[in-house]
Amino acid sequence: MWGPATGIASRLTSVWAGAGRFYIWRSGATKRKDFQARNRRELSDFYPQPLPYPDLGDSPWWVSKCRLEPGRYITNRKLAETLVQILREKRKNPRQLLLECNPGPGILTQALLEAGAKVVALESDKTFIPHLESLGKNMNGKLKVVYCDFFKMDPDNCKIAKPPVCVSSELFKDLGIQAVPWKAGIPLKIIGILPFRSERNVLWKLLYDLYSCTSIYRYGRVELNMFINEKEYQTLTANPRNPNFYQVLSVLWQVACDVKLLHVEPWSSFDVCPQSEPLEKLKHREPFEPIQQNLYFIRITPRKSLFTEHLTPLNYDIFFHMVKHCFGKRNAKLVDHLHSLSPVDAMHILRQIRKNETVKIINMYPQNFKQLFQTIECSEDYAYKWMYNENLEDSAI
Figure 1: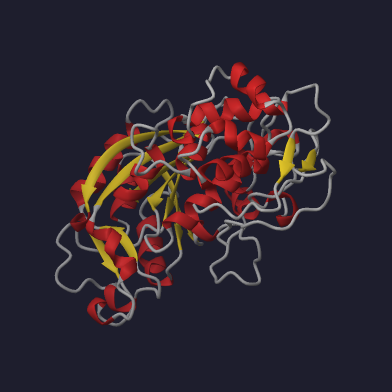
Figure 2 (figure 1 turned 90 degrees about the vertical axis):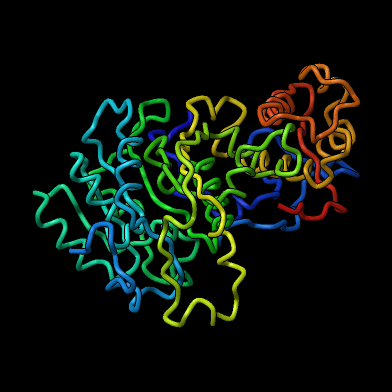
């Protein structure tokens, strides 16, 4: 069974893992016209690439020194206590290690520590480091502070990525975190707020890491507890009953993970640390629009059943491409897409997944796509399972 303990390569390289590339190891692929295997043109890669308690005053000590990229921070003590209660609910191990991403002034950090948690603060802004380290000195070693940006962890190219770049294998080794089998318990819980300028990019990067069992998912089914903006939450949880938000991300995240809503908080509960110049004078105001929505605190837990004999960390990119291909024309019939995707008899596939020839992509639920992929993958009567269409354009995400 696939999992982090089975010795999978550290990361599928861009030659393997590009979304939409048909490099088939087990099942074979073929060009649509002549059914001959050949190198494919590249399709899109979607890598992403002592503070007062709650009265902070009009000008907190950290505002004028904050980092170049704006960030949201929990500065409300009541909210911090609410999150602690949520995280402690039904926890079998109340002292389990928590990784907190960009804690900033440390309001939530202190609440977690007071509740008995052991915390590693991954802070990407040096301005906050001295305060967090000071906080840790009074906590008997329960807090470790690391200058690191979780959301830039394990970039494709460390030479291009801006610091602080962090390599998960080195960090986790220092923290004494070991990999566990995929179907074992949750080895680690991570809490934070997705960066609002790049939420979509981060979600895609996490997807690639998850399906390939690389980066943090090399260590098992790592649980994410994250604040996310309302629009992205609606996208992650959408299905045919929410057609306006239903898209590729919806399918891939729901197939891979259980996404549970834990709490909703208005954006006004968070302090924003913009660039050194006033917010109203920033040249581009669009990135700040999402903060005027509610923020949704969600728990994302990878499914034990994600990987099977036919969906593995070695062929997940074909699954990605299949879903992207389908949503390129999501109001089209599934049978029409099958003719472009696979030489396997389309009507035979439909019978196996118990769908009629009138069903449209927009009416397919996330698990239906996984069933479709596995049905094609396990077709034994065909030398090639997948086709490449020269006219196929990159699907919009």
